[in-house]
Amino acid sequence: MSNALSVLEKIDAARLRRVKELSEVKTKMAQASEYSIYGVHSKALIVLTYSHWEGFYNECARFYISFLKSSSVKVSEVSWGMLLGVLTPSLQSLRDRNYSIEAGGRFVDGLKSAIESGFDCFDESVVLSRSNLNFQKLRQNYDLLGFDLSPFQRFRIRIDKELVGWRHSIAHGDDPDLHTLDLENHIKLTQELLFLISNSFQENIYSLTIPEQRVS
Image (tube, rainbow, N blue to C red; front, side, top):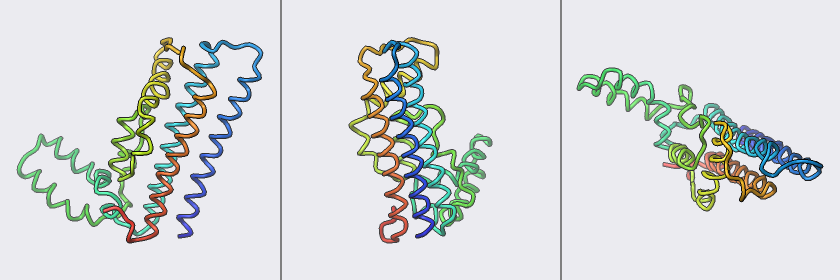
């Protein structure tokens, strides 16, 4: 339980640090004497908010996997989807061999040990984001983690259009249509999403300290 509390505190500290930075940026922009709402300040804010969105998700995912590795829990006891992090090498081998009955048999034989395995050899990359944490990627990762995605449903369009879409457009050198941009509201959106991410990981860490609440 003490390890769980330590990880919960780390997630809280990481979120508060990011929230404070975003609040400071909002204050600085409000005090700026010269800036265009469609110019460099707005573009910088969009890139920064996305970096906090993806960066915090990955940070929480690493905290979570680290917590699981330090516990005695089996991968299959946490989420069946997370078995992908154990089976990835076997799946790669199956693909490299262009599939065969023999290779398929070896894969099936390895399933039993995979189901019984812990997180020592878990490949965390399967639940991380790689510069594109849109709603589809979030859903895919939450499915693997066994997390509840429903708190994010009402933000689906805004995640894809404002948080991810505008950032990708800027990153590719384009000029996104920012006529609907409200700087303060954009920061508020990001801060709320950071809270939802932290809540997802913290709830599941807490549930794993109570055996009867583990996800099957």
